[in-house]
Length: 219
Ligand SMILES: C[S@@+](CC[C@H](N)C(=O)[O-])C[C@H]1O[C@@H](n2cnc3c(N)ncnc32)[C@H](O)[C@@H]1O
Image 1: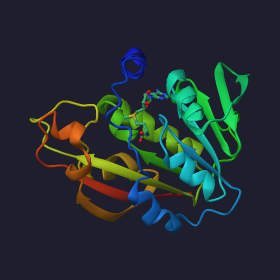
Image 2 (image 1 turned 120 degrees about the vertical axis):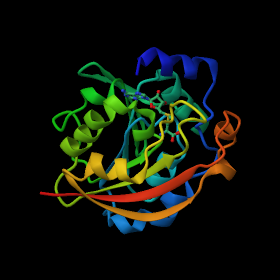
Image 3 (image 1 turned 120 degrees about the horizontal axis):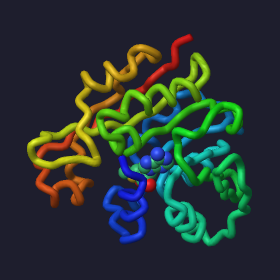
């Protein structure tokens, strides 16, 4: 996807994907991942999600990755904090307390740059990737996550005749085929996502399946 697409979305404030509340699927299922206090959780394509605040409040170091500097600045400004800023290998890294956001292209991250990642949380990240980039995105997740560790992922599926992405519709069979080479895949729950997706209902979506997946990185 052209980076300008996302930069423009943030510039114009067209961020219907941003939720004013922490994801219920995160609160409900996070304990399943067994992440230890003080370990690092990676949030790819993080936007300014409140889910990062919730994760930091649980006692994790939270590392977000986000293209838009405006999103990153809004995240810290809305918390009323001034972020420390450093430059690392082409990324601008802004941090405060347990939250750090690496501003730049997620695909340019690697295990040498990042602290050891103990878990990954993906909401509206895989589905933000066009189909041709999804395998590359999943390969990057596999590269960044050690064996035995988990991803909690919230996926979306809808009738593609009703709307074109992003977010892209990713049926359960497609999620499995993307992840099963490197991960064990378990579906934790499936629900109707339409009641809290007015921005997609307004674009013509009449059925929205929201599924929560637990992925475990195989050795
Ligand atoms: C649909 S939004 C989801 C944001 C967040 N996960 C949430 O739940 O609110 C996708 C985000 O990914 C960012 N993004 C897209 N491509 C990216 C890339 N290659 N590297 C880093 N961020 C990217 C966009 O700027 C946008 O903020």
